[in-house]
Image (cartoon, rainbow, N blue to C red; front, side, top):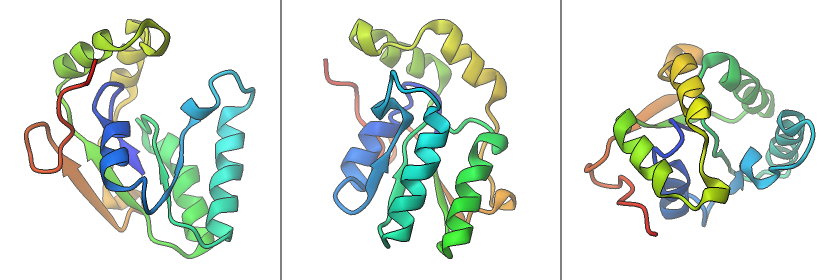
Length: 145
């Protein structure tokens, strides 16, 4: 599971590191769908039942948002790793502002995520938590316009 604010570089990191080996599941894949959370749960459960490795690419800002996904993995008998893209808010804003208008997150959405954000910990049930910071090896580079 990747964790981070909008514009942190989660999708870019997933594309660079996991897309070739994992089923990528994101509520962003269904922008107009009703009950996106339920759909995500169903797709993750189906992928795990089929024996696939799965990465969930969403903000996943709080323990309450992450708990159902951790529970799904546990019920499938697989460990869960969190990859936290710890990107400064100002850089997230810059990246978000550089996005095409159709994919830009309104400022209120970004600030709502900031308000509920809690860094992931192993106490939640993650087997491990990896932290990726901008400029570190493996961190996403600047957004391509």
